[in-house]
Image (cartoon, rainbow, N blue to C red):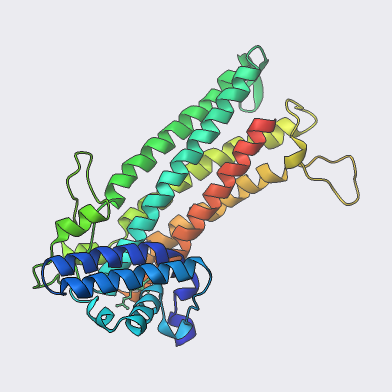
Length: 338
Ligand code: ARG
């Protein structure tokens, strides 16, 4: 049972966000008098010390404690008995929704920068070859001459729309679910706006953004599905460009020469310069699209509110973010050195 239900092996990467969320919650409980100021202060100090230990590799995760939330809470309570009061007015159900939202926010910010880098690499390649004319194709038959830059800038546009979709999704990720409890909220006078403001859940005018319905907040993952969809479409765009690069590297086309750093050889044919990175970008888009499907299917039969099924949101979301980040770096590297 422990092996089957644990999530610590993959959700431990949420530890920073879990600690920051707990620090905000403890601070708020101190302000509304559920914790004394001294207790809140000691809890915050202990949480910060735990963070230092994890950072330094001095923390041992325990599978029997199931997930990142229980591991951190158990350690907190070992160090600071008042830590047992931290979970007042909070459940793992709103806590995990919070952590996922904060983790995704950071990923989106990173991805957005990586998208810009790729756009810049495409523009630079076009600029460096601004007099080069290549055949433009329809039906993969030579159709009309076009500037190579014209062709590259088509991808800059696609990626620009992916960027816009990502930033649009951010506004729905950036909603604070704390205060929802297990599903029915709390009778304590929790200051949800204070927690939201402390954690950066604010709209463009700096007003705190909190979820409106506690049952919705703990049981939907549409914000994660949306991220996976935006990622899938981006994956499709990257895969199309990757396919073109594979063609352009191939002898009958021979439009580009792949930089050495992104060419691979063969153990038996020393003349080969294989475009492995482009092929992998093309293939890995399949995994990203698959993750979107997996997440949608996990969600489709779930009654309100939380069900353990929702723990299965993590692998698709984590894998998607990691794969995209690597694919974008590989693509930018290929384009820059092409
Ligand atoms: N590890 C769980 C998840 O990722 C955390 C929430 C667990 N809540 C519960 N009631 N069992 O979804």
